[in-house]
Image (cartoon, rainbow, N blue to C red; front, side, top):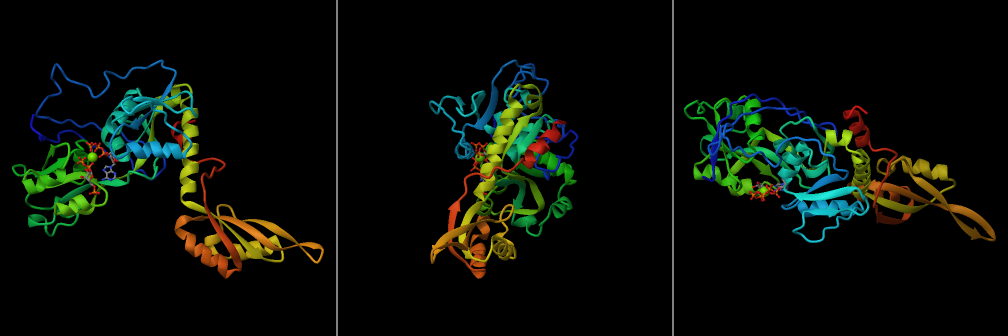
Length: 394
Ligand SMILES: Nc1ncnc2c1ncn2[C@@H]1O[C@H](COP(=O)(O)OP(=O)(O)OP(=O)(O)O)[C@@H](O)[C@H]1O
Ligand SMILES: O=P(O)(O)OC[C@H]1O[C@H](OP(=O)(O)OP(=O)(O)O)[C@H](O)[C@@H]1O
Ligand SMILES: [Mg+2]
């Protein structure tokens, strides 16, 4: 089998629902491809990962974590930061446990197989990149994004074209679509590993004469090798594109991706314990991720009363904290009398605003400013949980 397989877009394509809300699902889309190495009518067709969708009566809830690649270690680390330690006896063992959640089994799988197994119902929850959910979930309405921003694995799925030659002055999808060069005899040739999202995107952008080829890696070489005119691939720092003389263009970002927690709708609705486990994981993730962006700041301030100190603090934009400052009197004994001339204040400030906050504190008379890391912020209820319940119609 050759490294590059060519296929043509034949089927209808519809839109992926935008991921503006914290809980997103993808709409069902059907595409047909003619792949040179096998056909859908082949008597020995191999289904990806699962034989058929079938109800299972297992009692454990299963979460899939990436077994390899750049998401693997970060996923374990994230859970560890949430006090969920994955106990794996050895790295070649694909099942593990999290002692803090007894009824949860961890299965290590390749990211694409996590999505396939979620669709098949063999996994209930998974952590993967949003790009993988979109590509391998193919708009399956059963997939629900429970947490859309786990804050690692940041990248985007983008279309890129050469900086040189006929593309020199092409800087947008509109300009690419309007190039006179693309005809039925000489279509735009796109190399991509994203054989679902790539064609869908091109169709949505009105590119009619397009063919696609696929390979497992180093796609950025395809234009220089003369195999393709453009590529659709993941971009993070942009270094690989730059080093290969390729550029992104306006309107060419297909998906902004990062690690997400994804679940199967049927699992959440039908598998005993799955919804409770999802709630606990969501709470832990949110508490950790909210805290990660914040510092606790304590300082002393001279003042006549807690209210007077509060007014000074709340006059500064960077010092309002999560709900407002906590202010406690600092008692001292002077001339035999106990009095509170100082107040200790505690606020949370975004890490990004740390120095500005310290400056503002000083400006209103703050002294002895102490900064400490925050581990968890548990709020009354997480907005994502409310959103999930509403998505499930609960
Ligand atoms: N350059 C990158 N920077 C950050 N995140 C990335 C980058 N490339 C990919 N990712 C994210 O990490 C996920 C896994 O990518 P990774 O390269 O580890 O595995 P893969 O491409 O599926 O497998 P392999 O590269 O071994 O074929 C991707 O689906 C994406 O969400
Ligand atoms: O914008 P950058 O930071 O340069 O990252 C982008 C590159 O990272 C990924 O490849 P990966 O390293 O996973 O290699 P692969 O092609 O073997 O999957 C992706 O497919 C790009 O080639
Ligand atoms: Mg890769």
